Amino acid sequence: MIKENIKKDDLMEKIVSLAKRRGFIFSGSEIYGGLRGTWDYGPLGSELKFNIKQEWWKAIVKNRDDIVGLSASIIMNPKVWEASGHTGAKGLSDFLIECKTCHQRFRLGQEEIIHDHEEEHKKKKEKVAWTEPKKFNLLVETKLGVIEGQKSTVYLRGEITQGVHVNFKNILDSSRLKIPFGVGQIGKAFRNEITPGNFTYRSIEFEQMELQYYVKPDEKESMKHYDFWKNERMVWYQSLGIKKSNLRFREHAKNELAHYARAAWDIEYSSPFGWKECEGIHHRGDWDLSRHQKFSGQDLSYFDQEANKRYLPWVIETSGGVDRAALFFLLDAYEEEDDRIVLKLDPRLAPYKVAVFPLLGNKPELTKKAREIYDDLKKRFMTAWDDRGNIGKRYYSQDEIGTPWCVTVDFDSLKDKKVTVRDRDTMKQKRIVIKGLIDYFKENLEK
Image (tube, rainbow, N blue to C red):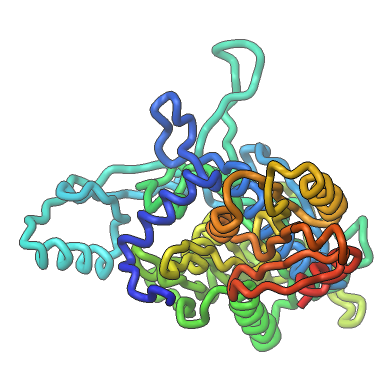
């Protein structure tokens, strides 16, 4: 029987515990007391993140003719950030106030959010007091140069977006792309975050998956592309197993819109700490290209042969976090059924696709045959090996890390050349011919 009544606060604690216990996520630099807002992904977490990125890349770049990929440098010329508005007089700095009760920080001007925060404390009969506004710079600085005292200040990128826009001309000149077209990128970004917290949701170092899609500067046509990508991104999360009831769209209020945004919606996930942004879909207009054209002195316009004119394209952006996606996939997949914990991850995301066991680990003939099968399967799929303890505990151990299928080699396997394949979600078992295992798993992964 599935336990549907796991309290949300308990769910978060359970995921944090499972993530460390089973090698998904560790605190950064833990043996030295850690560093707040940093996380290390263990053997299973690395695979989960890799699989999420692979599925995103397939959906955005590999399976489309109008989108190409890019991997831009983390450290860029400081003028990039001046042009984008991250530095300078109106840079990526905010005046913040801090709640003296819980030490959360909020940007000035977020009246509704601040009011809601005060109401939460009042419900608990707690006093609310605020610090004086202080200015915070969210970009992470570093130094370049070999001579101390003469090093220049540069920044670790605060977003991966600008790496695409500064390469707009290079991509046009080196390809046959025509408007509309897009550039997809996955990469690390860094923020001197206001308040790191909620496990991996808000971190100093994080990974983004972004699409910058260039369209004609036409209101009607651009909104057609905007609506397409908005819905396309929602479908992607659902197609990989997140429950529809746990996802929603939320439009940014006028006072929330970034200075460059013509429109902005978030895909939000119903997490243990409230509805939180999973991915943003933004209509950026020509802000990025116009700014880089101005600050670089380079002509970044596009010549439209059909219309016989030049213009600066508008940009539709989809921006999601790999770390946030990994957290939400884990939260959504977690279930408790009587005496077992199971992560019902989509098989495409599961760290291991298959686990192979000899029924008894102390029987050489079973171990030998199981090893042969394991060696064959691991050439095609991430495959786990386990010959410890009883078979029931091995099944439950794989359930807890989300492995979709377990293969057990028993004494009958030596005679009939078949093995028992157990399904993670249903726990049903069937006998499959050893020679047909690769096709069986391949077919199920492609469904």
